[in-house]
Length: 268
Image (cartoon, rainbow, N blue to C red):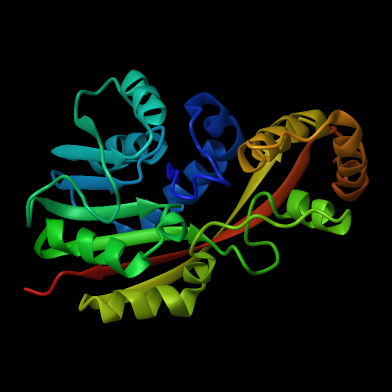
């Protein structure tokens, strides 16, 4: 989920295992709710656009009894992780771009983007491509973190504390598409029918603060890949977060994040 590498000079998702630790758990939590909301029929042909390390692809396998799935992503290392983790033999994975999918028209019953759309420089073209490869009557769906609103992004606590210390917040190429009204407008402008939206809020529990910080460090490495931050700069960020994220009596740290979801149907 969220396996894009579009903003080459800023945000890189190349390490499938690291992405799984940092974001895969979060995105799986949202993906469970997203699939339950879609309530898709069994036996469908799916395309998972921006499949990344295959986290959402595996959810489709587990929850939807698909006939077949094609996962598409620009990162060869993420695709290698996805191929390695996939055991059911239902999914295939191909290198490709969200705005030029490697499939012919009307090849699938359902297309989905999980935590990807705001990484696409031209989101409308990404939606148009999903619509192109889905048959008449099929579904086109997506979910994204509510990136620009408080509490809408899993790494928001980290971003806020780094901003307070003077770091510039790094955003994907198309952050405005994370807003619910923007998603709804994109789907309607693409000519999709029966457009529906839903807000999904999920909670994640970390074993302790150090468990949370391990995920935060991965996020920092991904967003500052060109100029790694030294330990003496990171220590104030770590301590501010430790003070902010009050642990439960067990030592666990729990907080919530929110995603916006949208779905529509290719007109018959």
